[in-house]
Amino acid sequence: MTHTDNPFGQVLVALVTPMTADGEVDWPAVEKHMDRVISDGADGIVVTGTTGETSTLTDPEKIRLVEVGKDVSAGRAKIITGGGSNETAHAIELYKASEKAGADGIMIVTPYYNKPTQAGILTHFRLVADATDLPVILYDIPGRTGVPIKYETILRLAKHPNILAVKDAKGDFSEVSRVLNQTDLMYFSGDDANVLPHLAIGATGMIGVTANITSAPYRTIVDAVNRGDLATATDAHRRLEPLVRATMTHVPGTVSAKYILHGLGRIGSPRVRLPLVGPEEWEAAIIEDELALVTDVAGADFSDFRPDRNAAAGGALPKVHGTTR
Image (cartoon, rainbow, N blue to C red; front, side, top):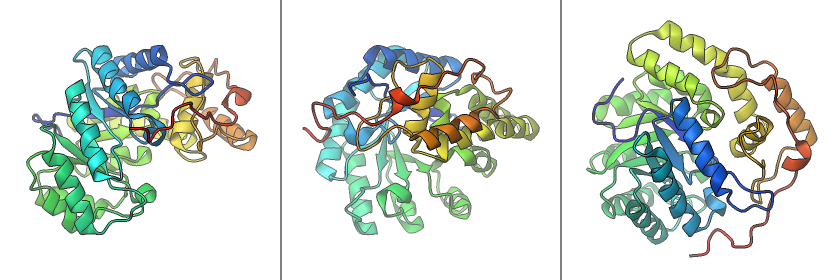
């Protein structure tokens, strides 16, 4: 469905953070990549999210990504800052700084590792949302955080004036329908393979990893759903399937997306920061076999794909660790 009061966009890219071979942020590549995904059809970019390697970025890097995003987008796409922290006080300061840097919205992940109770999750989200005037997306991804945002907690959080949306990576479609029936929250698919199913039951849009490689098919799917053209949406969904499988199945999405983007010549290095490492030989071989099945996908031409397994091997140990504040 189309939300006229949607402050986030509908086709949102969970942006990778391009880095040099020694693990430093490659700022010219960041600008180039942002411009590419917007030109291909994205109307929103989530920086410093899981795919952006938020857990190993420094706070200054996170804020600069917002600033660069605002400059590059020049009003063409919303810039949402993701990540946050599993320390409520730290999360509050990060989001305040992001608002000052020009972010259009914030995406708050459930506190990870601590495994808080639902009362703790509720308090964390409320305090962060209280600390900013920006619209908020709740990020529900229990596979990474260890705890889900339970249905009852989502209903309570929906009453907060700044909390407008949920990014769903839980895959419970019955719960999504239940929340959509009982709240005004917008839902964003956080699972690349389930974008069309989420949209079909009333989700607003998607926040995807595979969209780093091409956001054009997702633009096609969303626009088709908006006008009620299921046949066109389904065709694009089917064509995307092997690319989604290559990107999301065998190694972390960040790793595969950078490997693929480097093979396409879009970024200078596929490097990720430790403890992430590039795909092993057998993993790279599987990814390449999957990519060989990709045909007729707008923005994803693999006829000149030149993967470099050696360049992707291992991971970088940056000079300044990410938790420095």
